[in-house]
Image (tube, rainbow, N blue to C red; front, side, top):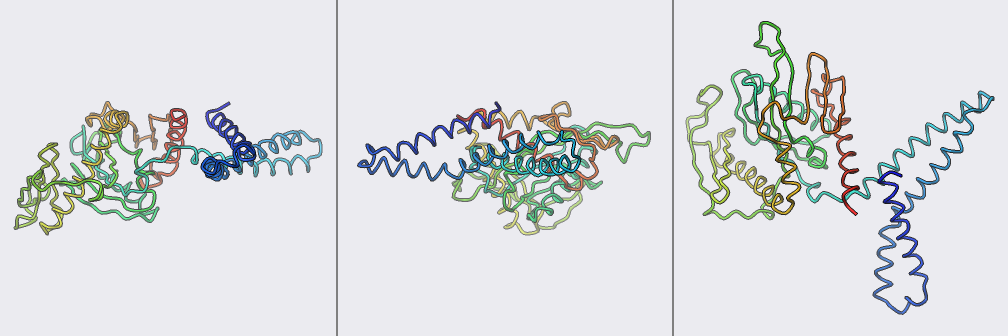
Length: 357
């Protein structure tokens, strides 16, 4: 018996006990108890209905299986068609039950701030950071989410030493939160004349966007410096002091924004990033396990630490957390991430079912 089935049997037993208590004459005079039982009954009823439907489909699948061996080819063909349809229904209900039972992420409704930084590998790592940004941008476009660059530090060849951007839209955080970690790339750099494959890395951090109501920042806790922004290679792109660096004195967190020509806009963007980093720090204090998990995922940016490998010569992507390998890296880099993200979400749901009674 798998984890999901065991949990559903336990809940079904609770539901039967609630129904028995509701029909027990001894409870009728206790209005508070009856109200609580009725509320719990209504809360569990949709789940129990799905569970009963799941059991019925399982029974039908077993019955149809017995017809597959029929000597009548027409009956066997009809049985196979019905079996395929039943398995599709079973898979859909199972996914729905698993989602209903999984503890809800309090950040699921939030927009997402993603920070990508080039790690080991010099200019090639910066180019890979740019490729990751484009991959996420195309994925966001496919979901009709919006992408806003908050801060960037581009290089002369079109890569990024660092780029911070916000993805806004329904379920953006819940689908992108597993992208946090060190991403390793294996490919022949454009600057490599001998055709030798190089290994580089970039780190990705995924933060839920924090609202002002979530994090209150005292003005005296901030040191704000302004300076002239510059482009790749030190090239000046602005003649006014529009770039903003904000230091949060109590934590030492530093955020720099220089993409906008307006000092006011750069300051607003820097505060948005700072607020989200502070929210994450606060949540780390509350959830030590989450804090340790993120530290192990993000790491130092060294290429030996990785959650995912992008092998361009073999057109292969491997996510090491769930041992998933796909041989269509070209389409994945164009933003087709659903297969990976769905698999990560499913694994996370199973893990949370196991660890939450």
